[in-house]
Image (cartoon, rainbow, N blue to C red; front, side, top):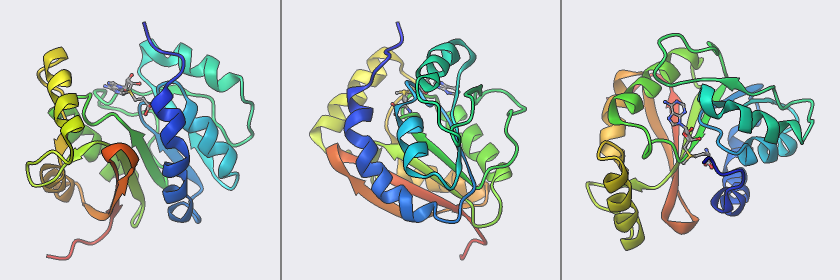
Length: 201
Ligand SMILES: C[S@@+](CC[C@H](N)C(=O)[O-])C[C@H]1O[C@@H](n2cnc3c(N)ncnc32)[C@H](O)[C@@H]1O
């Protein structure tokens, strides 16, 4: 059964917002992928009234997200919509920024690639994509707890797992995205900010 409340999202939403705030000053529309319980969507939309926040989820988990977001009527919180990374045609074709938390280690590598490919298409030049969660650096875990988490993930689904930043960079480059910021966050997580811009070799 899908959880209606995430303790982790409650803990990390403020540290994430502190980083997102200056990055999204001129942004008008943010597309969130895999919004889960909607806690990030509600919190960020309330704190960033100058922009529209579009939460999305898989069709099967959309009802829960919709009912959670429906409890917080905010003018700039769009009605959640279905978005499956696997579909060829995404329901959103333009956004100034993309946000996704704790998804890249859940979805399979081809889906990670698809996500970057689609994001590369829908962002304008200098648009950003913020990916939050645990990441490896140079093939290494950044903590023992992340190593244990990865082994738990792989037992559950062998194709899931913590992604290496270098591997992400390699695919992101093909999609016209480069790593602009790599913030260390509480609990051995990171916020990676990808920017769509001319790549400097
Ligand atoms: C670990 S949860 C993270 C939820 C939320 N972003 C958070 O940080 O609390 C991973 C989310 O990815 C979503 N997800 C999994 N596969 C997906 C796919 N193919 N397309 C879109 N979302 C997907 C799941 O439904 C789930 O809500």
